[in-house]
Image (cartoon, rainbow, N blue to C red; front, top):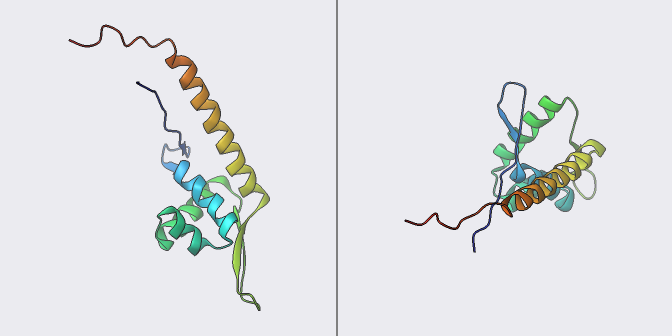
Length: 116
């Protein structure tokens, strides 16, 4: 059976890649693990790549996506800001909407007669 899928990503005003599903997974993992280092490992980013991606997205959006705490008895940690949580939620919803549109459009895609 043939299926259609799409890939969704966000770009800045100059058309530079900003974030896609993997970055959204990184953000969700920060919230789940309470640590950028653990989230990076869980999503296949190096710590440096995760840090750079996070900073680039925050800079483009103009607000922090992650709140960090330093030290203390239990050590430091990271959690998503309100804006970070909203971004993950809205990106996920947008992804679902796009996939639904692709599935609906593919219902009209006729694959008969394509073979030689």
